[in-house]
Amino acid sequence: MADLIVGIQWGDEGKGKVVDSLAGQYDYVVRYQGGHNAGHTIVVGSRKVALHLLPSGILYPHCKNIIGNGVVIDPWALAEEMQSFENLQGRLFVSDKAHLILPYHILLDQAKEKNKQRAIGTTGKGIGPCYGDKILRNGIRVMDLKNLEVMKTKIAHILQELGYVEKLYGIELPSVDSIMQKIESVRPSIMPFIADSTQILWKAQEKGEKILCEGAQGSMLDVDHGTYPFVTSSTTIAAGACSGSGLSPKSLKNIIGVAKAYCTRVGNGVFPTEEEGEVGEWLRQKGGEFGTTTGRARRCGWFDSVAVKYACGLNGCDSLSIMKLDVLDGLERVKVCVAYEYEGKRIDYIPTDYNNVKPIYQEFEGWEKTCGVRSFDSLPSKAQDYIKALEEITKVKISMISTSPQRDDIIMR
Ligand code: IMP
Image (cartoon, rainbow, N blue to C red; front, side, top):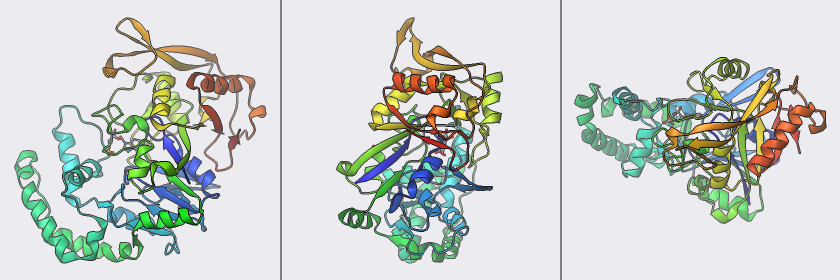
């Protein structure tokens, strides 16, 4: 069986820390969607590790790590990330079916954003155009690295088809030769890790080995169920773990949703509980809410239980991990959105016309300090009340609470 960690807000929920705290118990950690638009930060002592493409199990020597077929891989970004780790052979497997982000995807991503009336605020890493090519059946896959002649012919054809964008966006596409030159230089770093990762996972299952799937981004950024078009281009909800790895839906067992004790979003799009004033700034500064991948300031606001309940429904969450509770320390009052006002009525679901809802809040008394607390009973009573209320409103058990960026500052319930 495989367990799953999935973000249930707009990404950056702190999934990296949850995976890190659990990875020690697993034989395999699997990334199944997204690419290096993701940024999972893990703090070990004074060392801060930011992972983008490598699964978080990479920090545990016994753990095998899979970059599944559903991931889009910038081979240069992967090669660079791999440099920080030794002895990856036998510990890292890159699906031969995963798609490659190539230089024209990045150019296109950035050009499309510039040309849009209202930009999505993408990470500019080429994610959307790469997934677009996959769906158009125009993609270049990791397995193509095995035959550069064939790859070159495919890329030449793609560039020819793409010719129109040069005029449309006023950009110059790189030549096939320059792309191939770059690919040849990165190829030796990737080749030894290419594998049929689905077969590896099936064999691991046969042997009864434990598998943890690690989601990237968050459910509200899901291409189908998120706040379209202000979403990423992959299936970020639990269903994506199957299509993005080859594991069957029947093999998913424990699904853990991860949310912050408040809420953040990077990029544009609806965010009903956003606080633009003092509270937003407090959360941003205290929570260090600046992107791991792009450095962009994150938009901040209160916990939105309507959105969380929706995401828990999409994912079938068995439990929730609530992260960064300590960031709320010292606030006089803490708010939770419990419903929306929409067309003059109180609703407790997300309407398709999501832009026009107004949050309805329940207020809680604040507390002094939860930072570094490691048992539920040692939390200030008001913080306990807050957690219990979130549990009651969302109807999902909160099994883990994080009280600082440090690896061990976690409450298990
Ligand atoms: P893309 O994934 O680069 O195409 O960006 C699409 C949207 O998803 C933008 O709003 C990004 O800010 C957001 N996004 C992508 N990756 C992450 C992430 O890891 N955390 C939070 N937001 C993300």
